[in-house]
Length: 113
Image (cartoon, rainbow, N blue to C red; front, side):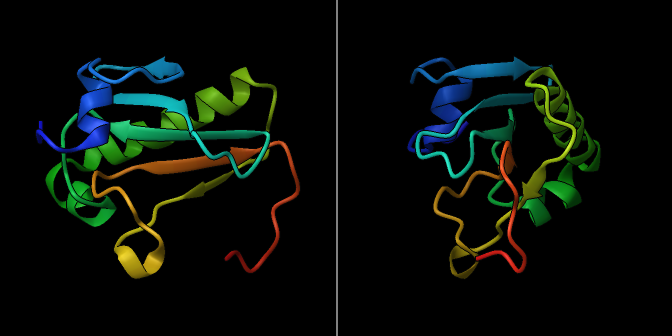
């Protein structure tokens, strides 16, 4: 845990979130500023700065984030969804605790951004 990390505070239960799924290694909750009818963040319980660092330190947790994304979208009745891992400020990462955006419920444009 990192004291000033909002996602660590959500994992610890110190900050409320609309949690939709939990596992031993991950927590999924609704994004406060949704960009699709379903917009969930799936985060590791361990604090790591970004997806690349998570892949180096806990590759099995990266797979768990994807499994949780599949579960959440399936539970919501979606079989098509987008997963986004932003790494670094220029890529749009604003919270430096690795997190997977899961978006569903609308057609996703390409290219993104």
